[in-house]
Length: 130
Image 1 (cartoon, rainbow, N blue to C red):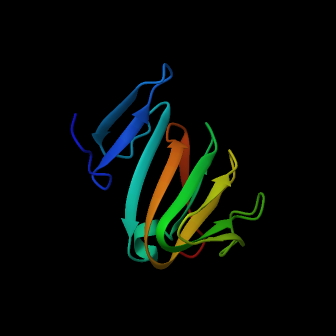
Image 2: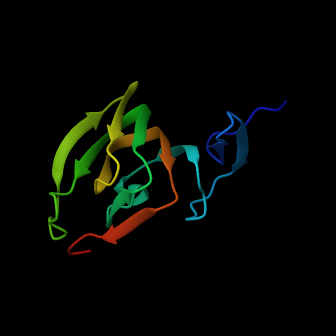
Image 3: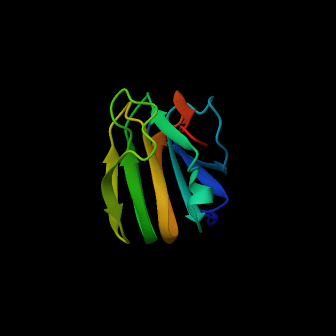
């Protein structure tokens, strides 16, 4: 047994209850549940230019330190430049992002976040004006 660096690794949760630690990567071939921990200093590290959508499952976004905001795009309005603020997350809080909802995250202060999601089927769409 060995300790795992949460910021350079990710966990893959298998259907039989198995867990594997792997080098962190974002790839459309990652089927099943993935758990990643990220340190974000600013909006630039949270992909402010894009909306994101997870078609294969909900996402749980947890804030360990710092503060972030989650925005949903107005339904069927890809030109919505800001979206609707739905949550401000601070240390020890989490939010379930519904399957298929376009969303984005902004960084209010440097943060450590942990995300549980199904990466396969994730779509990114550039925001209007970026």
